[in-house]
Image (cartoon, rainbow, N blue to C red; front, top):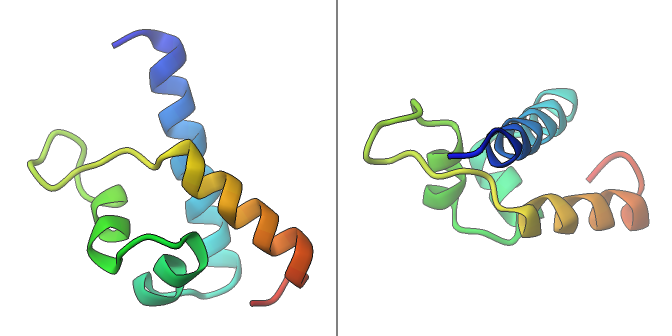
Length: 75
């Protein structure tokens, strides 16, 4: 995996983690915001290297940013 791809994955996870923490969201609320299933959102926070782990898609970050911008800071 290239360093650029790895950095992008870390940046996406960092962004989603900050949104989750700053709004005290659970997985279900974050899934609704990102328009992904709750199980898929949980996979973003799984231990990297585990079978359940999935990187946060760029699409999820874009959707969250658009929703936060259009709906204000509190969802």
